Image (cartoon, rainbow, N blue to C red):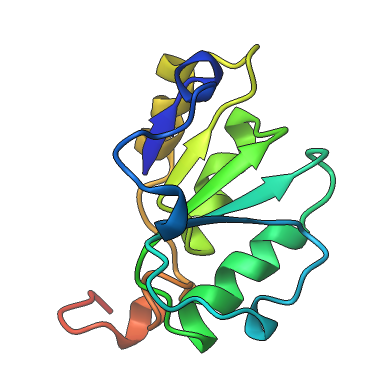
Length: 132
């Protein structure tokens, strides 16, 4: 997962044209949107306790087949990152008081899971070459 410091994202990603990027409020049903030509979707966490963007990300990846970048924005904390990645996020803009180096360590701590998720659909026991 790509981690972005809050100060680095203040001007937005200039490599992506505004026409190819869309920000979706967390109370919008992604299935109701036209996403033709969109290569990045920003999903907002207005508070870290509001997890509706997880559901939006999972819906976009698994049911709607969105293959572009899903970016978490808003009140993004370090301890949310692993779950964000598992639900389909590619990038996260960390809240200003979060340390990007500490955030990266979360992925080193949690390397594998028994359950399937938006990224790795099959559970561990069903994956080819999985140890019994």
